[in-house]
Image (tube, rainbow, N blue to C red; front, side, top):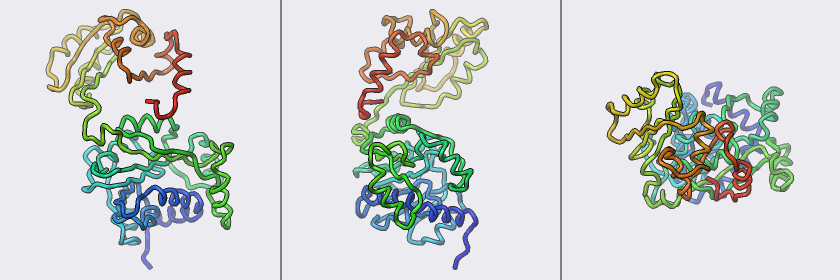
Length: 361
């Protein structure tokens, strides 16, 4: 019998101990993944999930840990395992797939948007491709942490405890739309078959919805992405700058190309140093040909004043962002400090909270 690394054996042990949890995900994927599909699993770990999708015609697993890749390749030779950083902008597995699985990957992702963007690149544009993501139920974070301390769950380095709204926003930014989602799995252990029965019949009851252990979402490319068109031709980046003279040039040098055209707007906020003079000098200096730099002085003080003028104030050339009020899909994401001077903040919260999920940006 082949000898495997301690990390491989450790993860396989926890998969067996939490058989009802992983079995529930596998049954869900058995329903979603079409017969004969080409399937890619991101963060394949020991390969347990991808190796059990036996009705797929092509099965590929991508994992950062080269040791786990070597072990999985030796244990399951009928599945192709590759080592690499799926989030990296330049990563390309070399093929295109009908279905991509990212199970329990988001909690450990360094950049969720890059992760989903890479999923989009690896989907076959000619097929009705789907992406399956699952993550820990953020409402149960204290329960997860307690289970780790009691030895009922393997210790992890989960960094992202994302909500349903977070997943929807990241998916939209990456060009996806939601097909189906839900919370599943009340009991992670088999318990001689009782765990599966509870997860099958009790877990779907509305009263237990937010007590389930994981949340899943099935995504597909939006119509504009399937048509091969770009959703965004130009991105405007607004940089409030008060006493930031030493950071203006760095903002120009480090800004990535977010779209074919990028508009960089510096808003000087009554600085006491030479920020305004630095902005004027940098705006006339060298920059990429895809970048346009604009400058303006803020009439008031603070982020809250600037956002109130943009969202609720009159449309004026003094506040260029006020023109966004005419855009049918403009969405402002503000922290409490930035929203401090909005007169209708409670109304905005009420409208957003009562929108159906498919309308939210």
